[in-house]
Each structure stands twice: as structure tokens, then as C-alpha cells.
Length: 112
Image (tube, rainbow, N blue to C red; front, side):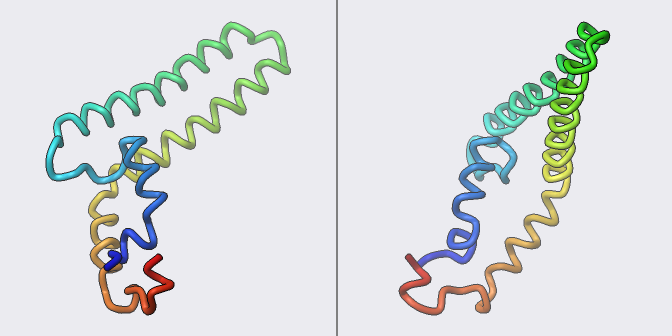
């Protein structure tokens, strides 16, 4: 039988696991935390290098505006990812709430 969480969150969970932000599995916690650290280090280093690029092209208005767009987009991604990782308890509570009968598959078509 299909799990409620697998049915509703299959693809998003798969993507977030590969990005290192989903809840780590019971085993390999150290390696998953190291992977999560490296992913977040990469994301935050992109912001750092965007600041450097803005300083280099400071005179050109078009380049600064494009770099600022990328900077604020990446900064919002980093902010959302950090907030998501900090609120793991809320995610666990939501996942527990999804295991009730109301979200269970009602027919064989739902299980596919």
C-alpha cells in the first residue's frame, strides 16, 4: 500500500533529498550533514562571488543591474533554504499530521 507521504510528496521529497535539505535518513547522518553543509556552502559562496562581481563592474549600469538581479534571486533562495532547514520540527509535525485517514488513498487509482 502507498504511504500518504509518498503519494503527496514523492517528487518534491526526491528533489529536496538530492539538494540535501530534506530530513536525513536514520543511517548515514554524518555524511548527509556533510553533504548538506557542502551544498549550502556552494549556495552562499555564489552570493559572495556576486558581490565581488558587482564591485568589479560597478561603472556599467547594465552589468550591475543583471548582477543585482542574480544576487537577490540567489539570496532569496538561500534565505528560504535556511528557514526550511531551521524549521525541521514544523516539517516533522506536518508529516505526522499527513498520516491520518483523511489523506489515505481511497481507491486503487489513487495508489498509482
